[in-house]
Length: 86
Image (cartoon, rainbow, N blue to C red):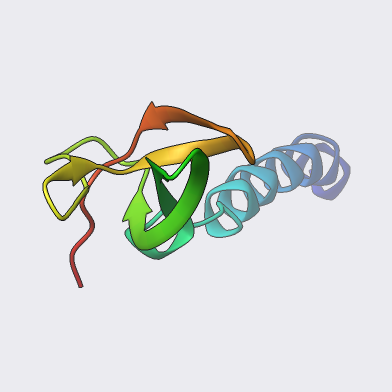
């Protein structure tokens, strides 16, 4: 009887522990702090850093009435960014 319990019980316990530890070690979900990006606007022929924005969808990130964007290089700004809140 003891052997039967060990042969069946030990693999079952290992399987159950694996499931428990898989859920316990699940990484945190991304938060707004993880998604902060520099916001740029095209000004005087350059892509200039003006504010801090987010890539989480929501209201557009604005600076002086202009939509902030990502930076591709010194003379090109990329996609629109979103407003972030504390």
